[in-house]
Structure formats: structure tokens, C-alpha cells
Amino acid sequence: MYLILIFIIVLAIGLFSYNWKLKKKKTWVKPKVNFPAKWRTILHQEIPFYRALSTSEKEKFEFKIQEFLLNCTIIGVGTEITIVDKILVATSAVIPIFGFEDWQYVNLKEVLIYPGIFNTEFETEGPNRNVLGMVGTGYMDGKMILSQEALAHGFDNTSDKKNTAIHEFAHLIDKRDGVIDGIPTSLLHEKHLLPWINYMDKKLDEVFEGDSDINPYGGTNRAEFFSVTSEYFFERPKLLKKKHPELYRLLAKIYQQDVSKRDLSIDAEEVSRNTPCPCGSGEKYKNCCGSVTAN
Ligand SMILES: [Zn+2]
Ligand SMILES: [Zn+2]
Image (cartoon, rainbow, N blue to C red):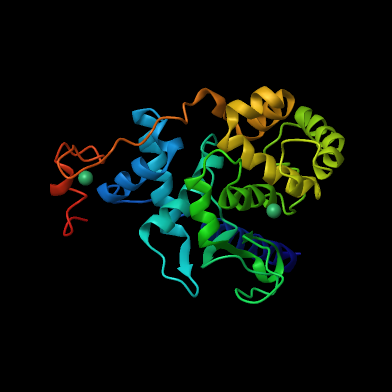
């Protein structure tokens, strides 16, 4: 009798500490230092979504960027990467989860940046290359691969409804419940689940046939439908709302963001050596983030 009791207690302690370890492992480290001024300047220059935020939202955005970069390694493979590339990756991670209280990409450890287009064998040269970004299971667990060119294009061209990095992060958000299937179960209230699935299934063929202004690749399957329409949602929210109000409504529910309310058309102010630094320091650009020695 006592033996059984002791056994149960030992088992309980074991399970408890195992659980605790799992939980501990899954928590991201929080940033402890100030957001670097130079990074702020990059956000101002490169990211329309950031420019459209209020002051307090900008602070929240910066915190999430810093948190992402602290907990996820970004490595160039066969290419040199800069802090701008890193901030573009982090931005693509943060934009889709900006509406959530506390989201951590615990299923992501590293992002590999390839110079350009690659194929499913991870070759960056030769024929049959048509992949711009990739996440997945098995070998790809905890990893993301992005083409450096496609990463930059996502933020250079902000009207073509294409943003490869946001596409891949949408897959990871979808994967939170275990499977990449276009149904982010953990995010959707039960009452919206069925309407979302019905909507996708109703539209898949139409999109695949190219009878829509949605990228036909989104018609491949539900998973791609979710990621492709997410690109559209974050890049051209006003247009999406006008052309596909039901789709917009459902995505706004999933992402808990009404992006169409944001003014993504605010241009980056022209920065010259003598204009105030975009980082907000009050210094001239040449004496602040524009100086070679500043950091
Ligand atoms: Zn995809
Ligand atoms: Zn500055």
C-alpha cells in the first residue's frame, strides 16, 4: 500500500518537473536593453505598417521585433545578410501577430536566408527552382528558409499583394495547432471555424482557375489559400475589404486586426544629412544614425 503511494508521489513529481521543463523551454527571453536607434530608423524608412502606428503601438512593435531577434537566429547561407534583412524578417513575423496579446513563435528556432530562388532539394543553382520561401515538418521543424530577394521585394513593392516572408509566417501561425492545413484552430472561435472552412472551399477552384485577383497559387489547397490571402490582407487591406468583404471580415477575425483602418500610404520622410533623425532622437541625421560610428 505504502509502496504504491510512494510510487504515485514519485510519478507525480516526475510529471510535474517534466511539464515545468517543457514550459520553461517554450518561453521566449524578454529584451532588457533599449531598442537600438538605428533599428528605429530602418523601420521608419522601410516599413509602411510601422509608419502607420501610433506612438504607443510603435513601442509595442519595437519590443516584439527585439524579442523576435533575441529568440530566433537569422543566418545567411551563400549570401551576406545585413541588419536590414534581419529587421525585415522580424517585421514579417510581427505584423501578423501584432493583434495578439502574447504570441511567441516557439516552433521557430532559425531562419536561413538564401540569395534567391531555390528548389525543394534546397539547391540555389540549376533548373527547376521555383521556391521563394519554405517552412514545414520533419527536417524543416523549427526552421524557415527565405529568399533574400523575395524578402526585400515584399517590402519594396507594396502593391502587388505579395510578401513571401509574411506568407511563411502565416504558415507557422497556422501550424501552431500541429498541422499546416489553412485552419488556425487555436485562433478561431468555434463559431467562425465553419464559415472560414466553407469560405475557403467555396473559393479554392475560382482562385486556382485565375478567375479572381487573388494569386492563383492560393487555389492550390487550404493551407496556401490561408497564406496567400494573408499576404493580400496585410499588404492591400483596403483593396481586399472592397473586393472580398467576407474574406476580409474572416481574416480580421483570425488576426484580430482591422488593418484596413491603418494608413499604409504614409511615405517615409526624405532623410538627408541635416534633417532630424527618423529615430526620434532630435539630433541631425548626420550626427545620429547617419554617422558611421553611431550604433
Ligand atoms: Zn505556402
Ligand atoms: Zn538616430
